[in-house]
Each structure stands twice: as C-alpha cells, then as structure tokens.
Figure 1 (cartoon, rainbow over the protein chains, first blue to last red):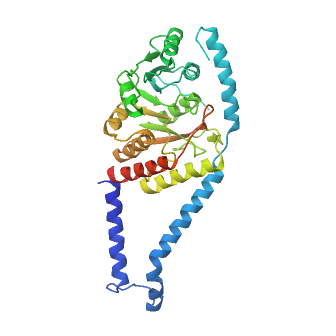
Figure 2: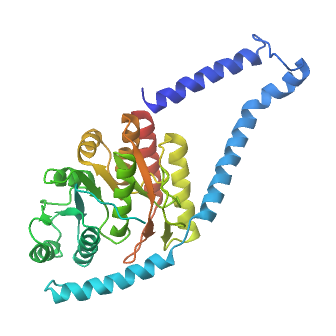
Figure 3: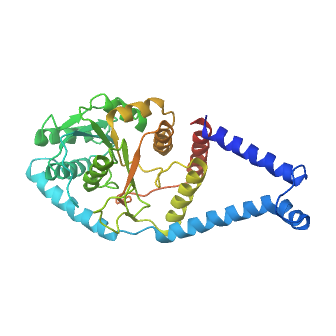
Length: 95
Length: 255
C-alpha cells in the first residue's frame, strides 16, 4: 500500500466520522447541542489554519536555528592547501 | 570521539564530471581519513567522459595510491547519477558503500562518524544531515554542537528548509535531511534499493530514503557540515521547484 493510499484511506475515515457527527446521525457524547453546533461546522477550517500556522512556525524556527559553520570553511581551505602541496610533491598535476 | 575500529572494507563511489581540480584533493582527504582510522578502503571513480582531463588526473592518483585503492571506471557520456552508482556498484569489493559529492560540500572526516554509528546500532544506512545537531540514534560521546551549513543566505535557508518541511509533511520519511547525498549503505541494501529506484537527480536521493523506510531498513543520521559551492554559483529556478514538487508527489503516490 503506498503512502498516498494510506493517507487517502485515513482521510476517508476521518471524513466519514466527521460527516456522521455533522449531520447528527451520531450524537456527540459529552457536549451540549449548542456547543456542538458552534464548534463542529468550523472544525475543518480550524484544523486547516492550525496546520498552516504550525508549518509556518516550523519553517521560521528551523531557518533561525540552522547552524552556520564558518570554522568548517576555514578548516577546509587550509586542508586544500596542504593537500595541494602534498600532491604536487608526489607528482600529481594540481591546478 | 573514540575512533571506530572495523575490519570491513569501505568502498566510496565518486561520480565525476569535470572535476579535474577537485578530484586529487578530495581523494587525498578521503585517503587521509581512512588511513588515520586504519580502515580498509577503495575509491571508485565513475567519470562520465569529462572533457577537462579528469581521467588523466585519476590515473596519476592511481599511481600514487595504488590500483587496489583507486579504481577508474569511466563511462561513455553524461549518463546521470543513479546509473553512475549502479555502474560503480559492479566494481565494489567492500561490504559498505559510501556515496558523496566530489565538490567539497561533503567532508570525508565524517565518514568515521558514520561508521561508528552504523556499528553501534548495526544500521543498514547512515545518512549525513545538515539540519540536526546530534546524531540519531543517540551516541554518548558525540561532539556538540555539530552540523551546519556554510555559504547559505537567508533566502537559501528558507528555500531549503521549506522544501524539506514540505517533503517531510508529505512523505514522513523519518530522516531530517531528505535530499542529502552523503550516505553510507550496506552493499546489498544499496543494490536492492537502487534496483527499485526510478527518479533522477536529487529526487533520486529522496527516493532512496523513502524506499529504505518502506522496506524496513534501519537508518541513522549524523550531523555534517555542508560547505556549499566554494567554486561556482548555485542556481535555483522556478523549474527546479516545480520539478521538486512533482518528484515529492510521485514518491507520495508511488512508494
């Protein structure tokens, strides 16, 4: 089963469950009807916005926390010089 | 960090195209790393008929390091990365294969760290990550902070991270750096995954990880420092971005 199939199947189950509650085919157990009426219709939109906010937050956080490594660059540059000298001594053509 | 000790042989496949300047240095660095850690090694240079004389330089290096250490296995033309690995695999005599770039963005000094993680947890695959600061699974004596990039401005970081998060959300691959190409594989594992792979370029690298996860292979990650493009510029256009998105969705629907 591909990932797409799994995701679609899960989405299908969630959609069916949501529809059953939305169309009052199944009762919502613990809340009063007025609360259910105000929450249930907006639940998908809430989920979408929350997901969007989560993704943006994650992006911002990760962009801020990628480590810069100038020391790696300098180390590499000096290693390249050492390598060039050593290789020239061994007869390899190094540009 | 305690150095790994291993009696296994490690084959490095180095696909090259016009790497006349970089090849001797990268081979020098790889050889130095393996010799310092007393590991058995070989490098397989898969050159796609470079017009700049890369193969000449490779032959000189064979003279310096020996025919058992450096193997030059050229191809007739520019045939792509995936097939370069497949071609190189035919000549590997090691139990493990390391793939990496020849342009210094991947530093061979991380190879012993890959090996150590692989041995500690008996992993099938170890991949380098630019986005984590500690290895996973955890290693007790790892140096922190580790990993990172050099040469990325904010825009590049945004694009890279955005692409990574997008792929991560769609594919949940279990690795933090999906497009990275600095990896250690057990030889039969690499053979198996490559035989199933269908994409090209960096999507190919993503596909390898996604397939590995789907097949149940164990994957670990080691933070690496990625020094980007010390020679030359990187261009990232709209075409590439669309291609990337398409690649991710193909993997989503296909694996």
